[in-house]
Image 1: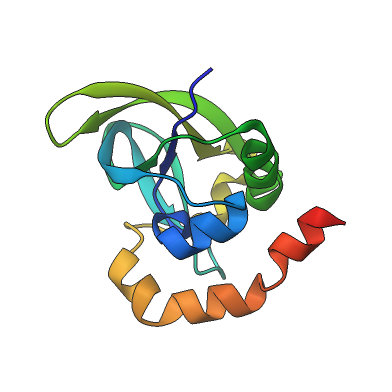
Image 2: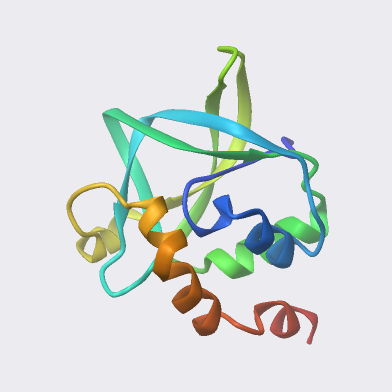
Length: 141
């Protein structure tokens, strides 16, 4: 089982990923082909869905342990399914990783267009953190 996680939204921020996982992990840039990323209506985070011509730029984290996977699964919730995907690194190396893919039955919640990471960092991140503040404490109960 891969200990790598491909992220493409809020978890691209190392501080959020560390908080959710409970520990820091190594990361690098990666690309996931065959998928597209869309904003989730009414939220500051995105989702990815299979898309033959799509390409999603994100961050690949390594060294994810069993307890961190439990925390990640809880954080992502029922709208996402963890799937094994193949990502490409900047040096063209391909690696298997897990990614959270939006379940098809929730597709109506997706807005058209690509999600904007820079806009998230500029304003959405603060809203996101306020909304999900205390996630790590809820996981410990």
